[in-house]
Image 1 (cartoon, rainbow, N blue to C red):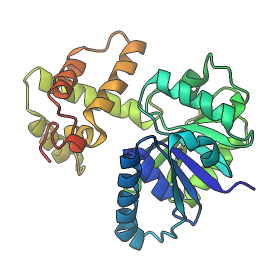
Image 2 (cartoon, rainbow, N blue to C red; image 1 turned 120 degrees about the vertical axis):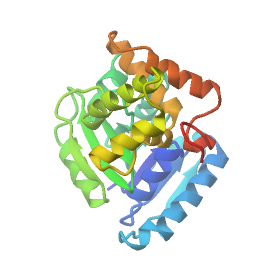
Image 3 (cartoon, helix red, strand yellow; image 1 turned 180 degrees about the vertical axis):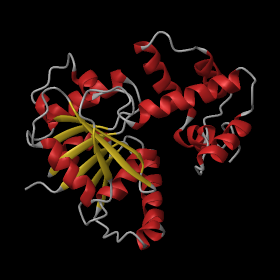
Image 4 (cartoon, helix red, strand yellow; image 1 turned 90 degrees about the horizontal axis):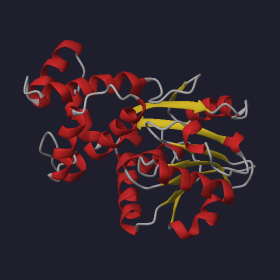
Length: 279
């Protein structure tokens, strides 16, 4: 029986997923081309263990790092492989194709895309095992443990229940997206909120800080939309907005233009030290 979870991409999402999937003693194989990303990921995971792990019962499964050229070795013994590469359909298709070629036939192949559905990603690919592919979209674990599971029209019926069970056992709060949906459940709602927040700021009606303040005052949430966008990364937010715009021509251009100006100025959010706020 295969035991490991293979995580492709040691960025913000990948390192958090590695922490979660190792939380009950399961081995995790973390894969990235950049040694610095792998080194940073291990430091962040240790920090999670020393803080959140002291209260969530983390059992500390072994996390082994691999460079990209060792992908075959990293997929050995993996029952699940999750890609966390940049939000580009071309890149994601390439990675899913590669996983399908290398991974054992029984390995579940999952995408953590926040906007592309697994149906979109696998369409037109020459895969050997279409039916083992699934969307497995997480948010901000371990602090935000929600995870959305969405199959394609041909995903094996037994995969969804297994992922629901395994995710719950590893500290996630799983939700089954029952139909093909760009943006899954939450992101479809969140997309409208962030887009209107950007539109209000672009029109000069209120500043990002003022918009966040009234949002938090009314809804009693800890973060406003601009604070959340800074956390996610404005480059990621823009990529997602561009994808939505491709499917819905009626969406306004102003929110994407504002994001473009921020990105051009090197303001990507928390990860660059400045976005709509300074960090």
